[in-house]
Length: 436
Ligand code: URA
Image (tube, helix red, strand yellow):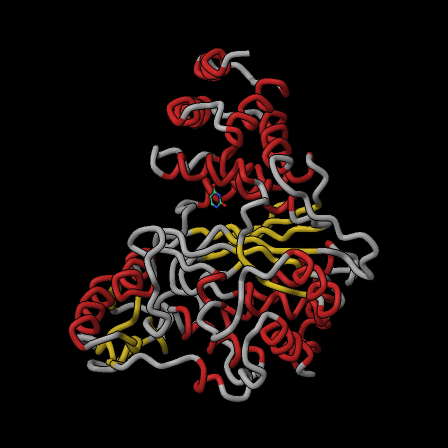
């Protein structure tokens, strides 16, 4: 079989069969497909699409391109959540310990920041000592004993995706529904899950900017996961503003700790966290329905059980034992903190969320290129949500920066990204749609 014949078939709109797809995925891993051939097939799929059966075959082949984890003899269901990426999205940090406190087992393999979006692994690395690369045996032990562990991607899980994603990233073929589906699911299936909740972010801070694209992606992921034997529910959630009140790596860990301790739960962040956790408990048979699941989850928050799980996970992965009690001792503050003063009175009407994510990268809180170091201290706190009426001079948020010049640039970006209008803004639902 020749790579160019497989590319030709897809170029002409034909469905690929299992042997052709396996040839491609093998070629990704053993480099028998050249970079040009990988890029050409990616573009052919981008333009011609793939049927559901082809997407299932591609997902399975990519899953089997590396190690596939197994969780024999677990006392409870093995569950996870994946988000398509947003700004201020620290849901995973609360969700894993909350689900663990309700009897689930969450072996979460999370990602780093991508483009304007933050990454869970980067946030956890703001905690001194926390390792996101434990050896596989230790990861297994922590998940079994505590119920959750959040770590980074390992080289041996779905290596075909690693190469294909890197090529797609530089050949304008990322935004393809079957390719995103196979990319996300191959990694989740390789983690040996029994149930998956997908958070498809939708809006001006998300990768899926329209409800139509978000729905198409959600339907594809649910159908392909089902075809590959993984029970999945997808929620399409609003990403037209920053999620929660804080963005930036250390600041988001602090917001997480305050959330788990019950000191501060921003309502939209609370709603999306509860909604996704509830789906996971139902998928895992730990609650009869989402209403019963919410009662259980709220009890795990109120009793401190979820906070305790988080604290134990941090210690098991090398972090400080008193992080929950003294977060400020470990999560160092930025040297400069300045308010973004409203230029006039009005209602916060729109937020260009993607631009705010880019402003965080410019502050040093994300990477300009692969391998860059991140300044964990920088970001925004006390972010006022859409619909807030402010007086002239009142802060829209606080900027945390490495120096005064960077803070001033971020203030200008923040003001340019928000509009202040006259009329009240109707609240929009956090969960826009459910699929599966
Ligand atoms: N996240 C992934 O893991 N893969 C994609 O293709 C897009 C987002």
